[in-house]
Length: 227
Image 1 (tube, rainbow, N blue to C red):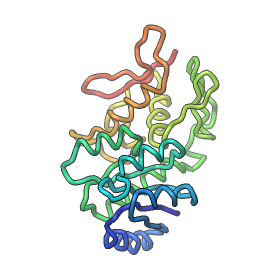
Image 2: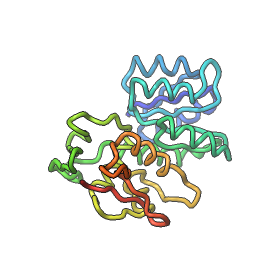
Image 3: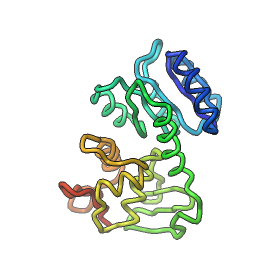
């Protein structure tokens, strides 16, 4: 599995290359944002690991430009305690984040969780096409369309929306949704789901009464409203 790490910390990149090679991943590295974008355009990577603080072009600028031409999954590396960086990264289209210094084993676990949900075996996927008014979900092709136009979703956004549509009309609690869509425990201060759901609400047309398609059930979770 080909992964690209964009980080100006050469020593960290070399450490991760050695560790992830033992985990079955092939890790390429770029040490500034511009070089990283060039590699993404020239190669087919399954996931990116992206640092925020870098020379030439920082991680936020890289992610903003990347989402203009690719929906490849992205794990952002953020300074420990910098919650605003994490939220901004998620709002720009990152799939997950990990504070630095990061534990290589946890990084490998996050990589597997994202890739596992992007490449779920066919026997575990719902196969039949489902329709919810103007929205059509085709699980086999991982496509969700509205009025016959495919929605431009990241892998994580697709996973969240698919998990909610699978339980359409029912409340999905935060813990269950985090496990199903992100592959991790939902922590009390984790804003990952909130930010991604905010993105999805912007991409989905509201209901006839201008209410959002995805409703928040305070203190419990979220509900996808079928028409």
